[in-house]
Image 1 (cartoon, rainbow, N blue to C red):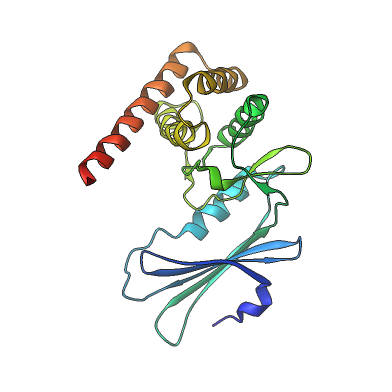
Image 2 (image 1 turned 135 degrees about the vertical axis):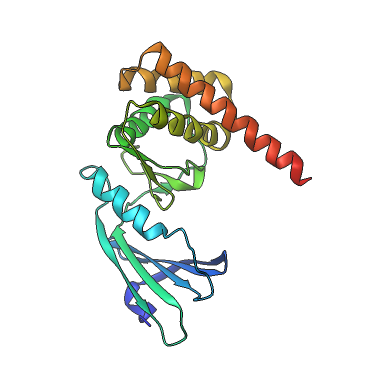
Length: 214
């Protein structure tokens, strides 16, 4: 098993789906994500593969991936260590009206390269010292061909979470964001409408799931 001390300072440790997940930071150099997956779990999402692939596709302007390594431990667990470049910035607690264009530009740059974040939660954004926004977690990323109906459907689902968690379900601010995003992506009214329809369907599905749990 790897010596966790070599990864720097432990920032977070949690159990999720029976798996231990740890995040370390070493100076302003790199972030290490360490996973311990019990052998009893036969199928696991493998977020390290998603994040590595996403960062490789995104390239310049996004944190570099240093890859991952996996090994079996003596206890029958799978230990995976993934490392990427550190993004210096402060956690984002909210997006101002002046930042809607920055948010639209960020999502445009990600989507143009065939990547869907698939987890546009507020805690996955940081703001650097120059005021630029960054996504810091691509562990649930999806991939596709920009411009296709399927890709736009995935964008709609992505925007459902962004509308809910980043823009606090503010319709007027979301409209401003979507108009700017559509302009940057040079989308037709049909494509923008399809994205919006898929967002509404995803939002309805989320609310239905919540009501059924009560």
